[in-house]
Length: 376
Image 1 (tube, rainbow, N blue to C red):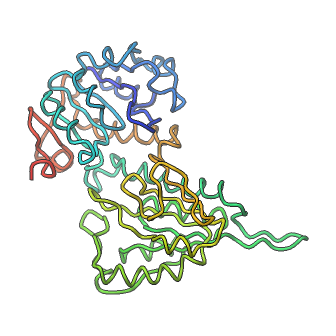
Image 2: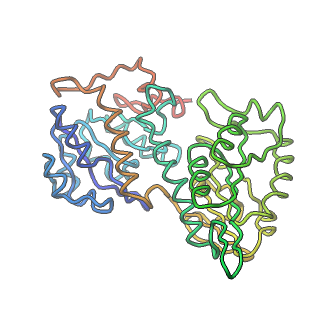
Image 3: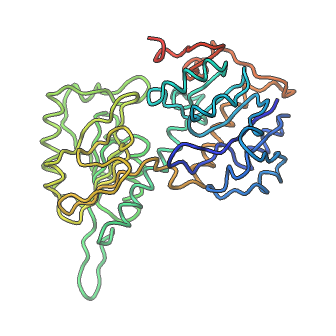
């Protein structure tokens, strides 16, 4: 079987779907590997490094994808790339099907079996395949680093002969993977950290990292988590009470990190224009939900905005701002997804559609749309 790694062509994407480490492992499973020239350059990987592991370097995407049985990508292909895929090929990537349905339809028409890695279920057996966790972890770290770079003061308390520098106050919205990493990073940098989340289980996690948990306690909040570990949409009454508490808290903060997402839906609004106006000039907001509309009303997706002296970072694709590490983790997620599927002699894939991982993540197969989100 031939495995192909083309360049990423979506905007703001600097990652690559394989590394020399995973290429070597795939070749060890008796696959041939073709890498499009320059695919890893923005992730600090040269063609020579891939070639040293046994990969063939293809001069262009068409050559890389020619007769490829497996295609690894970080993000979904552009629609003009789909015609280059072999009928019957298997594609894995972060697909975000709701954002570009024509691409998914084109992949189905091309006869490509497509797996959306973001739909891999959060079960113990699939932890090593979880691209959302591996990438969100880095995004949470990068959010704090970006905020500290913009913030005009030091993060930790400093006692000097000239006087004492007060520590920065950091508030984190959402205590999922990105939020918990943001809390841990801000604490390591010496800030006073507090956080909020609609999931009751997050309280213990936040406090274990040294943060203060800020939340309206109610029965609704204690049940606000899906079986998959995500936050549920809350009632209007809860949102109003929480907003009042946040309004009181946010005015005292120097940095806010927004990480709250609801799978498949627009990001919830957590910081209003009034909240932003209440913050001190020089404060910084980092909105990791910018690509899904943003948690902050003042966020300008893809840009850095300044409102009443408050800087709001709305960068797209924050994991891609750390392309070396994010590519390394993503590549391992990809390898861990495929390893149990590859026949021992490298002759084919064992696609057992009764397997809950494959069933949950497959979008297209045999010319048809098969995922419930696409067929309902």
